Length: 348
Image: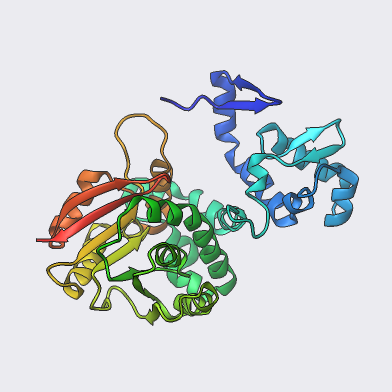
């Protein structure tokens, strides 16, 4: 069903008329800016113990009270916070996700989507629609991942965001997919290891290998011992376009293939095929785009892929074609409680 743009206030749900829905769509960048500002100021942390007066929030954040009020009033109107008696604000289910260090926190994700590079990129999106080529490389002067490697702060924000988003996905994957007959799981492009740690902790028979670029893998190396996995998980450094570690029963790639165009996606999959035995399998964790007009995270991210990376979100038929070209047959599609599915391929 189509989006209703319903806003809930005090238990009542208001469905907005088409003109207001259109207005909200045009003002997405405004709401994003306010949301990023409030997140970086730590407003949700300040409301963790209960409602706070605007003057208190302004004092704690070294901001101008009337101006901060205007920001929080806007965010309260779209359900992020809740305004009480005109001078106090309280937490909502959405703002709970903005708290620092919570198990379901998406604070780093919001910070990442608010980085200045994004509005600059989307402002030139017409180039991508006209040519099919990503515009972000022109905006940054280099490809996205090379930019992150050269700008450690943005790189840290991006990796933290992927880790946060990955917590929900990782728990869903660990519950939905049966790893009982896997002995060694190789996480290709595994970032800081959120997914692999979750799967290993849920499947105590498993051994894992996390494989990523050197500057990314360094962060994962520090996180494995605290999780009690130092003897069950090895961190290896390298480039999956050059070589993928051999010896795994299963190779898992979470939100990797969507970053790349058809030819490079096939190239990555072929490297995995070369590394595994005939009895191995590949597991792609991706947002499979459904048919029809239903809202789906993959449809939003597909536009990001178009203008930013040159990759794309795909339908299941498109993933089946990628797998076939790389020497796999599509053997299963396992939906999860998250927007992501497990796409399983077996060597042909």
